[in-house]
Length: 395
Ligand code: SAH
Image 1: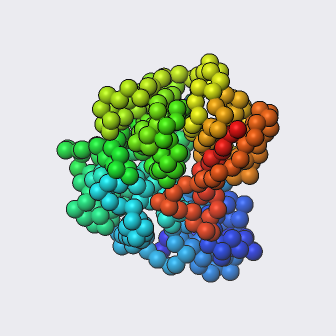
Image 2: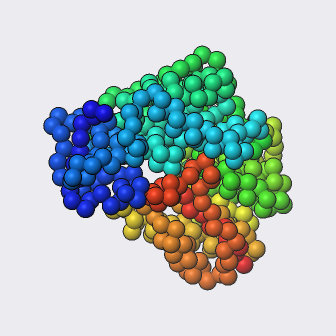
Image 3: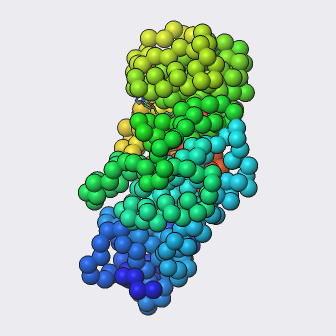
């Protein structure tokens, strides 16, 4: 293996020995000259012993580890990793005609740091979060075609906004494969929606809320539901199938509201139970009446995108949840989430606790929620856990 080398300072190999997949810049003693961001490098202890191979990047994380074995990163390597990811999703029964939307690759959780692949029917949407993955995109695309065979007809690459800004790669979104006859009506637990990878946020749909939506469905019968931060209406169409009396979907993005309405129509035609509003969450919550809803979902965007924003984010979560506690009907159920990776489960719970205390109401925790199995957390990389939710019974 004649990859360029990174040599660690003495004793700085400990976290790598425990398979943590990042090399921080502070651990690096020296590195070969002319290293370019995105290059494949081998990492060695101060004695020169091989310890890992990965992608080099510029910043506080210098290497994201692809393997702890001495291996060449070639087509066979990508195939091996993608096969492992695919087999796991098959083994847990996630891939079915009534559920053809799922996450195939969840970065570090699938030993592929910096890579996300979501599957929407016969289309894969691939997203790079590192220069290394961007430069490997063609090889990954070829491997993906081999691994998924006939079941895959299109691969859409969507990394314009996810690559490090300073890398200036000029990455453009577009099909790497197929793209002519794309059917974007896909399924999740028997419900249909438009997989909107061209215009939608992220890869087009929030695949990570699937299990939590199913839980909401079970609590929806006869309830008046408010789906706040609804995006394309995921929680709304589950609530409707669950027998909700009415469902109001709210998002500040009018594009999202149009998509939510279309997705509800796909499943329920013109159903008068559903109404959608393009409005700011705080304004809507302030204006709504006390007791108007007895099932509320709060699934805001990440309030803390980095550690420096934690304090303000916690205040934001508190403020948001406080209005819900104040206004939800007696016997109401609140589904409240945070998808900020920088906010821990305990911090979030404390923010929700403070909001509850402010309202003075009796609040019990029914469920503590997280991300689903196709967003696995590598046990050696606890940072991969990001989605947190609480289901609360409010009297
Ligand atoms: N619950 C959704 C995902 C929510 S993503 C699902 O299951 O698919 C967060 C959403 O919050 C985005 O659609 C974004 O447009 C919306 N949003 C951001 N700021 C907002 C605000 N101040 N008021 C209302 N919606 C907002």
